[in-house]
Length: 456
Ligand code: HEM
Picture 1 (cartoon, rainbow, N blue to C red):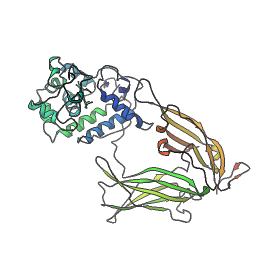
Picture 2 (picture 1 turned 60 degrees about the vertical axis):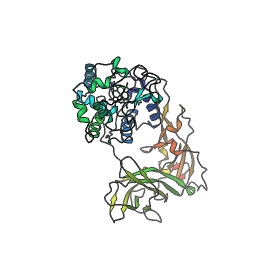
Picture 3 (picture 1 turned 45 degrees about the vertical axis):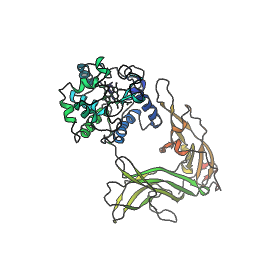
Picture 4 (picture 1 turned 45 degrees about the horizontal axis):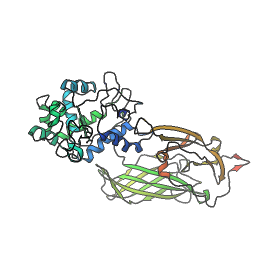
C-alpha cells in the first residue's frame, strides 16, 4: 500500500505489487512467494488485493497476534503504481513525508513498522550489505528474537539494548541503512515505550494494521468487517436422478458452534418450500433433519458440519429453505432464508424445465490466464450458448463442449443461466470428474411436436 497518495486518491492496497516485483523497491523473496501462494484463490468474487488484506489477518493471527478486521471490496490496479516505498537508506524526514502521503502520522509510522517487524527477517541474498553472506542461519537475520511469534520483543529488545535486529544494529549502521533505529528513535523512543506494554501492543497493532490495509484508491467502498455466518450452506447441489423423477439434494450446512446462545447442538432441520413457494412436497414432508458429522475450527470460532442427502420429487421441486438449529437445552435459532433458483445440472450440461426451454441456456465462464509480467493470472470471461439436446421427463438437456484456455481450467467458475434464472459461481474444481450416463431415462412427457407445453 506504500504507493498510496491520499491527497490525489490514488494507490493504496490495490495489488499493484504484482507488477512491481522488479521495480527495485520491493526486494525480498516473501512478496513473490506470497503472490504465488494466493494466485489459486483469486476469482471474480475475491480480488488479489482483498486476499493480501486477508493475508494480514491470517499471518498475524496464526503467529499469535490480534484479529485484524477484514473488509472486502478492493479492486486490483491494472499496472504498476507510483514509486515511493520506504527504503532502509531513507532519512527520518523521507519516512515522515512518505508515510504522510499514505495518510499515517509519524507515531503511526513507528507503530506500523514495529508491528510489521515482529515477524520475519532480512535476507542476505537481497540485502548482502545489511546481512553479509554466511553471517545468519539460512541466510535470514531475524528482526527480533521470536521470528515467527507476534509479540512485542521487537520493541523490548530494542529498548533494553539487547536487540540483534539487523535494521537497528550491525552492518546497517555504518552504511546508514538502520531504518528501524532511525524511525524508532526519532521521537525520543516515546512511541516504542508505549508499545513496551505487553497489554497495549496487540491493540495498537490491530488498529494500525487495519488502517494500513484499508488504505485504498478513492471511489472504492469497503464492506463491513467480515465474520463467519451462523449458518452457512456449502456446496449445495440438486442432481436429476431416477430417470428424471427425483432431485437428489446434497451438500452440507456449516453451523458456528462458538458463542452460541443455547449450548451444544443436537440437530438441524431444513424446512423448505416447493417450486411454487408452497408447503406441499410430494409424498413426504417439506423438512429434512441432519445430525453433525465432523467439527472444524478457525482461529476464533468453532464449527459443526451437517451433511444433507435427501430426495425431492421433481413434481414439487424446491424453491427456498430455512435452517433451524436445535440446541440441547431446547433452544432454537433460525437462519435467514436461502433461495434456490431452479435446478440446473452440474457441469456444462443444463437440465432446463420444459416450460422454459424457449429461453435456452447460457454458460458464463470466469477463467484465468497466466500473465508474463505478474506471478498472478488475469481473470477473463467467456459466454457460450449451450445446444439443445434430449428431452427426459420434464426436462430438456442443453450441452456444450468447451475448452477453457490458459491451463488453469480447474480454477474456473461457471454461471449457468436460463433467462433471468441462474445457477451461479460453480467451481469447476468442486464439480470434478466426468458426466455419468443418465440411467433409466423416462420418456419425454412434456413436449409436443417439439414445442414446450406449460406445466400446470
Ligand atoms: C520504514 C519502513 C520500512 C522499511 C524501510 C522496511 C524494511 C524492510 C527490509 C529491508 C526487510 C527485509 C526484507 C527481506 O529481506 O526479505 C523487511 C522485512 C519485513 N518487513 Fe519491513 N520495512 C518497513 C516497514 C514495514 C511495515 C510497515 C511492515 C508491516 C506492517 C513491514 C513488514 C515486514 C515483514 C513482515 C518483513 C519480513 C519479511 C520476511 O521475513 O520475508 N515492514 N522490511
